Amino acid sequence: MSTPTTTSIRIDQTLYNQAKADAAAEHRTIAGQIEFWAKVGRAALDNPDLPVSFVAEALVSMAEPREDATPFVPRSRQQ
Image (tube, rainbow, N blue to C red; front, side, top):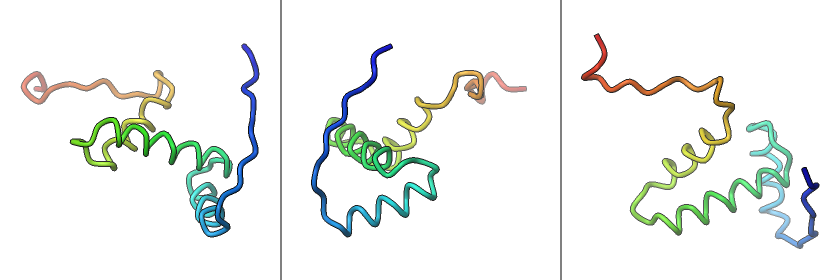
C-alpha cells in the first residue's frame, strides 16, 4: 500500500486550537481532526437534506472495524 502524501497549509490559530482540543477528545491527531471536519463538511454539502450530525455519525460508523459492528435488525423481526 502506498503512503499518502502530505501538504502543509496555513490555518487560523483559533481553528488550530479548536482542532487540537477536539482531536484530544476524539483520540485523533490534529491533522486527522481537520481531515474529519473536511470530510463531514463535504458530505454535508453533497447531502443538504441530511442533518450534519447524521452525516458525521455515518462517517464515523463507516470507519469502525466490521467485527465491532452490531447488525441492524428491524423491530418487526425482533422477538
